[in-house]
Length: 417
Image 1: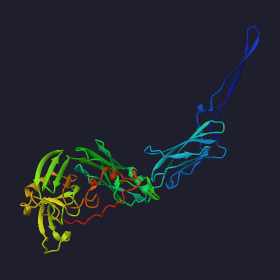
Image 2: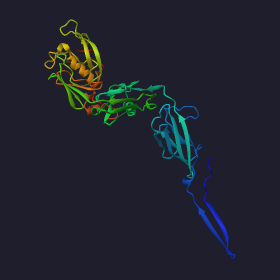
Image 3: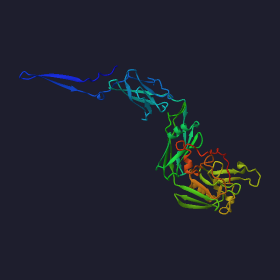
């Protein structure tokens, strides 16, 4: 065994000769505990299954450290990556083997610090570094929307490059997707489907907040042979709290900024058979000009309900074609009756004001309509129509089961007036 000589008890005897000729013997003993000794190099005492040199370890295999026969025992193993993250592991009761209990990351350099003890109790150590091979199958994340300033209702979205169905794998992904805001708020992810997640806080984002989304998935094992890849972070700024409340029964829209009413607008909404959806919607975008045709929502050309109109100052709130827009042809009904095919119509001047006031992510809520309820997913951002307890059930980290409902598929882009 090649380690430094062990410290032995030293017995020293000194013969003292007195001036009177008498001889006395004085003996002293010095005892140093083994654990206080300088650790020896334990390179020949332990081995591990990671390759040396430029070879890369298979991240799908656990890391093992073993004590050589007759070489004492392992007392501790610490494994960290370059970011300082620890790899969990378990040491056998007899100290002969340590084995990782959490998966290695792919394409990562690790440092392994091993502490040992020989048969006499003297300490040894060994430090080893190795790298894991990169994965050929990478799961990347694309956050949305694009960087910019948005309204208080804007969810953060995460599009995965491959489907993730297994609950345990979903939990791995969700733990790695971080959303932080200043000021801080309570929020969580919801799995819309196998490749898409939405994140929203319990309440609307605070006005003026800064929101950052990052992925810590790179190198992390998600499933067999599937590891996280690099993903670009996202930073959003939240503007004023703009809420437009449309009362379909009163034919009126009330617009508020940060809780104060800034405008009340007479409107018309969907007539029977084309009633506007109730519920909370989020502004998806704005289009100065849209040509709207009845055929896009299934109305036969030439029928009594057929239309083909140039529409200005169109603010989109659903993918299926619901807008808030200028409707000069229905000014006589605005504030008095619902005559549209599902959109919220107003005068050109009011529509221009609304168009210039709202931004993507602002809230448009419809109440007292006889129409259907806004879908949570698939036709825009209806996320806020789910109560917080139901929203939390969509997280792989919060609930064991979902509420049993499946999100609707994305609807066709079809304007309606």
